[in-house]
Amino acid sequence: MLDAESAVRLAQKHGCTYCDARFERVRKNSLAVEDGQIEYLTTRYDQGIGVRVLCDGAWGFYSTSDHTKLEQGIIDAIKAAKHHARTKKEKIKLAEAPVIEKNIKYKTKKDIDLESLGKIALECDHIIKSFPKISKSAIGVSSSATSKCFVSNEGSKIHQEFTDIIMEMTATVHRFGATQSISTTEGGRGGLEKIIDDTNVFLVAEETAKKTSMLVEAHTVKEDKATLIMNPDFVALLTHEILGHPSEADRVLGREMAWAGGAWWAGMLGKEIGSEHLNVIDDPTIDGSLGWFEFDDEGIRSQKKQLVKDGILAGHMHSRETASIFGVESNSSMRAASYSFMPLIRMSCTCIERGDWEPDEMIKDVKHGYLVSGMKVPSIDMKRYNWSISCQYANKIENGQVTDLLRDVIVVGNAPEFFSSIDACGKDFTIRPITNCGKGDPMQQMKMGNGGPSIRGIATVKSVGA
Image (tube, rainbow, N blue to C red; front, top):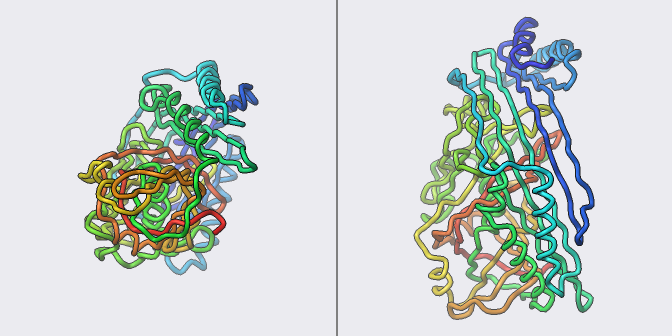
């Protein structure tokens, strides 16, 4: 039987400076509904162990779901690390970490079962299809129950159990030779309450269908550099792409440049990168988000991290390795998508902090501008400097009033200019679920939270294809 403590003993027996093991067991239920029919319904189980070894200043890693292969795999990982260490110029050192022994079980208020998920998905599909203009509805729902155990040769033994639920909805309309759709993702860490009580997905389905029905008759936009108010859903993706990723210390150090990019503000700690209204955190202690946890995959207790304070670059997300390089403490930023992968520096719940403006006040203060709503598709350069993000829809703002609905809108800017233009942040702080953040080689898809309030700044809007 696979066991994290046994794996650590094996790694020590065969010689390593440091080792840790993560045993994980996951049960995932998922189903899809399209136009009133359940397309598929699945239950999947997976379990296995990932073992990290540090030998002579270099990493080795092995993962398996077969206990008979564990010892040989660990031996091979140690050999690989020692071989790599011979030519490695900069030897890996780890920042100090406290020894922790703890069991944590995150409670759910409402249990999840496939029958309930199916009923909810079919009802949302029915709501969307009740709008006459809607030509297609697609609903996907999944839940995962995870049990994970972390053990290190330093003495830490941490067991965490949690449940996630995710619901994705898309409404599509095809009229006058044009096709428009709006998609939304709801959910978080917890039970059915995350989509029934915390977020009423039935109301979300209705609003999604209603807005989609209007989009085919909406106007496009001419290119215009103007004052924009971005709603929290759009801000979540913007924060993820141009604030969260460049705050990962491995990107700051240039170690991700070959496949995932770097950070334009490398070497700028303590310097101004935005207006005094810009405050950014990464906080895995926020209850209920997909990035909520008590210990990361290096056994470091979760903590709120101040990344930007009053427009000043204040910190990065660190592993024990990068913390040693920067001369700081590790700050609970290492996570792996599963036992199969080495942990990477990842966002947990990166957000722009709330301000003191009512969203309506922010709009009333604008003579000419745009209200940008909903995340869609990002395109960001390798250093997270130049960016463009399309939105689900937008509206004109004229003399403090929200007017014409706009479709196929892309927002374009560069990071320092846009951050410096922010002059208001709202009170309407919201966390959104992000389910498919890719990073690493081999690629890991990670779940997390991102969010913030409505924010106001200056950027360019243009039409898709313009």
